[in-house]
Length: 560
Image 1 (cartoon, one colour):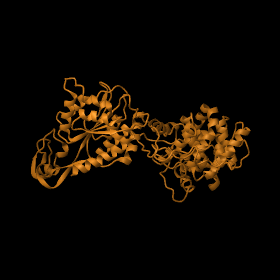
Image 2 (cartoon, rainbow, N blue to C red):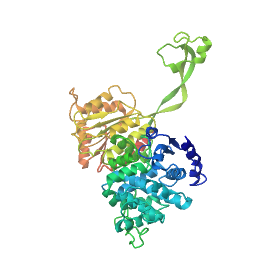
Image 3 (cartoon, one colour):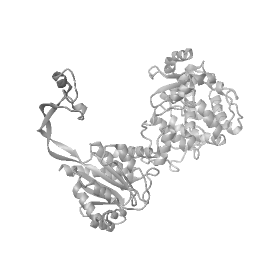
Image 4 (spheres, rainbow, N blue to C red):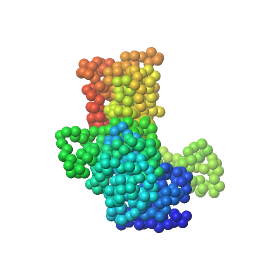
């Protein structure tokens, strides 16, 4: 407790090391490593959680490393992750993505390298601008001779003008010395543009990481501050590709004055508006510390991609709404909703409450209101998942994106959505009827079968057997949609009759959105589907534009 009390007295100074207006929660300090691990601090003696903006310290590990007399240095360093780099979850995601691009083939170690890079900038800032004893921290924990750690420590020696061997315990040859000189220059050049130098630092570390992956990884786990994330943490902006160019510091004219200026017309980075693939997005989230499945990562991917396109879903004007008219009290009996009890009237009736005997509830009739109510049109969407369709959890699928745009637009205005994914015979999955659960809908749309093509007629038939709410049916497929009309169901009822009956019962129209090779093919499908709005696209990319325009068009028509 004495050590914890001593460290807490240095907390205000640690905040002031970054400015007079920095404010954070008091740090969480744990007397034992076991308690720290229960709270999520594993493998490291200190961490800053970008999720809840809090510093965590394992005091037991601090003593084992001999750092108990350096509270200001350790605490100020952790505050630096909030103030300087990476500051928040979105920036950490961008930083990690940039580092991954600088580690081809070793992307799984990007988390360690990005933490090394952030620590490099933070420690250099604290030593130079605040005079803190950051070099002593590394002197206390020195000893490893693996190439990556030696290279990293040599960078600090150059930055802080320390004699060789003060921090670096391993052998430093001429090549490593040159790389360390570049690393030190990079740290100063990109001190205020930390994202710009992240990829170059990763490229510089690649050679040494390849030489000592296992030993370096184990050491970094003990010495670097690893953030803690909750699985529900939302990190926006990671579906888009980073336009930043990755240059090895030797080729970066900002770092190496002898390097040629890059040719803007050659090997230029991708233009804005491009997106990473869903499996890359999932790997990025997991490296950030989110314990989520590939399915959940895909759902988050398509939700974020759909957000810029969301518009209001169509609504219909219904007759005059009704308003409640109080008509007195009636008996409340056991089995009825508890919230229906009028407790004031009950206690006025008898001070002793006996359920079902003295309990009463309000009785209300209805009276016509003076305004018209608007009823949102529900959405019943069927997405093709046959072998000709890409797996949306691995590769960008415009079918899944278009379906997400339509479904999320409907949910946004209070409509209910039934989503069905289908492929071959008995290959289908669907939500539990029409739901308001966004996760359930996206989970269906990001699934995959990759089999044959056979539309689930029984789902369509059963859905509209007694459906009484206005619903719009959307089928996203290719020419395999003809299985919706030509075969019969298990009872021998032709698909064309089932589809026609469902369309009439839905009451708000139906759209077949199809990838077709020619107008003749569209006319063939239209002949099979009288009453359906058959829309042809020539590439899956057109689906997104259609989905965005669909709601506006239908909304305006239904309002008239």
